[in-house]
Image 1 (spheres, helix red, strand yellow):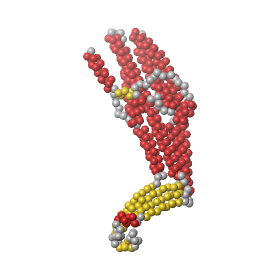
Image 2: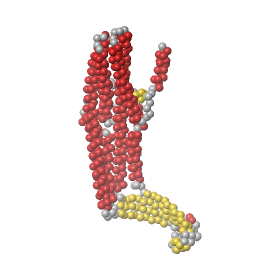
Image 3: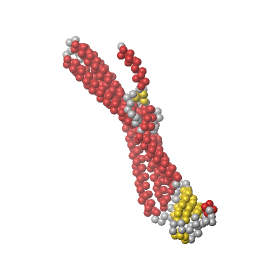
Amino acid sequence: MKNLLLLFCLLPLCTSAQKVLGLAECFELLTKNNLTYQQGNLQAEAAQAQLRQTRSQIFPQIYISANQSVNLGRSIDQYTNAYIDQVYNYSSLSTGLQVPVFQGFKLQNQIRQYVLLKESAMENRTAVLNAQTVLLMQGYVNVLATNALLLAAGEQVASSKQQVERVEKQLNAGVVGTNVLYEIKAQLANDKYNEVTALNNYRTARLALFQRINIAPDDSIVFEGLSDKNLAMPSYDARQIYDEAQKSFPELKSAELYRQSFSYQVKSIKANNYPSLVLGGNLGAFYASTNNNLDYFKQLNATRNGSLSLGLNIPIMGRWVTRPRVELAKVQERLAQNTLDVTSQLLRQAIEVAVLNLSAMSDKYMAAQGQVESLDAAFKVVESKLNAGIANTFEYTVAKANLAQAQANAIEAKYGFLMQQKLLQYYRQGNFNGVL
């Protein structure tokens, strides 16, 4: 009685110590901790930085320079341009700018190229997150399924323990022989082994989920169950889902934007064949210690000079240099198109498999439910006969094993159906809103 009261006193403490995580909370942890998704973020940031770097080349290049020197021996006096043979100081200040006026639209096409690459990286980041979320859902459902299998295995152990206690009483009463007790204990040992196997599977599934969201394993965490109210088989058309997915899936958008970027790369390479204009300007002044008539600032004012230049560069044999680069870019564009086709094909096949699996899991779940009902009724009949002494232990163990297998089949089919249902919902709408 004291132990029972102690248990009731400790139960609220044990309950409060548990932390419940749902699928949505696991998704939040995934976005914060998953290194694969973080890599996608870094790639998107790198693409954004590359775009900013390319855009900066359009701006004028402005510079300021200063020079200080000490001249020894025979040299030229910078102020008089006469030869001198003495030690004197020389300093100069200058500022200038250089502006690309025309480069065959090379920079403009490079900017368009990197805009597409940045958008492709952003879509790829979403695609990486979606792929990791699908794996998260699979791991989460696997934890729930293995937990349900563990509970079912525990019920089998408890049932066998009751039979062992009943047979021990019958043995003490001289109703049955020791062989019956050994056979029931063998069944109990087999059920305990199955329970240990189920426990290991559950622990492995939990560890895999903790590693997916990249947090330390915690035995106090309990994962929230999924609603199984809507286990009806909805109607899905694989072709229709695929047609909708082509418009929204980030994997396809990323591959298409990446392919489009090569057309601008080709244009930027071909721009090297055109003449280019560069506008330049310079303003400077200097001071030489050989001029004793003017101080530092007056000498700087007296030596002011400037220039304005317009440079024209005409490539003569540029096409020989750019042609191989253009050919390489066009091959890369075809490779990108092939990558897009492969991505589209894999998505279509994944949707077709998901639709087929959903239908199969629905049929399997319905069949498993009927199997459990039939075998449960059969087991109760055999168990009652065994208690009455008109059935042997072999019939009991066979009926019990069949029921346990049917229950396991029903659990696996149930959670497999829930997983496929969520996966098809994701494929149908192109995002995880309302799925998690």
